[in-house]
Amino acid sequence: MKTIGMIGGIGPESTIDYYKRLLDGTRKRNPGGPAPSIIINSIDLQKGLALLGATQLSELTEYIVPEVMRLKGAGADFGFLAANSPHIVFDEIARRSPIPLISIVEATCAEARARGFKKLGLLGTRFTMQGRFYPEVFARGGIALAVPRTEEQDYIHDKYLNELIPGKFLPQTRDGLVKIARRLRDEEAIEALILGGTELPLILTDSGVLGIPFLDTTQIHVEAILEYAGMLTTDQH
Image 1: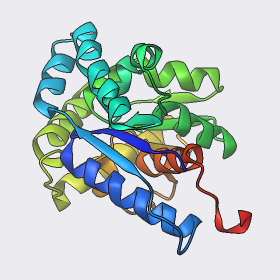
Image 2: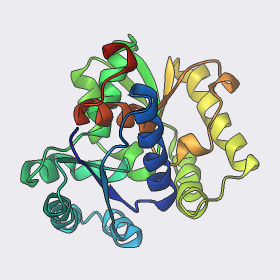
Image 3: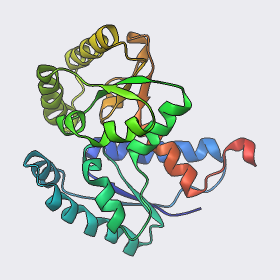
Image 4: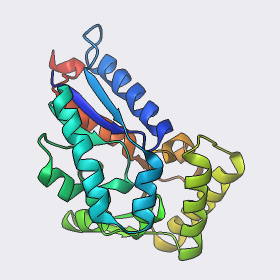
């Protein structure tokens, strides 16, 4: 099995979640088998957010590429970014990376296509909701995306940075996010909702509240990572 390299710390709660899900996914795919080999390079969240906020995308790339090289030096065979927002510069990072990188956006698009969706809602940080990296990939897959209104994006971004990333998951914030998602369902006719932030599955845990599926980008990413790592599913033994 290949050694997995994670660029984590962006943020800490989702990094822990990724690690646990990678272990759980390995046990389910190969009960009694070896644990996956995982190398975690936890980088500075605040520096990354500052560069994103200032739209210093070249600087963000220059910050992350050496950190990916450190994964290679530590023995990782391939890697991934444990967050959605830094995927705004994924293509450039992947082009310069010494190891293959698994994209959360490409993995989510592949899942959406496999399930036959044609129009999806997208929640995440402002960088994700306003960026082109999700729409460009999904447009190639023939899938349209709907994002919240500007004032709704402001609300989500504020809660994301000031509550979710520090690990605060409040019921009133959950209700606020569900209200926005419900409007997208009713007014934009979305068929499913992309949880385009790796902290969102930690607060939006029940898709039953909307009656449409949630696309948990963390779980979808984890499945793609384990597949690339060479983990066999139980029925492949």
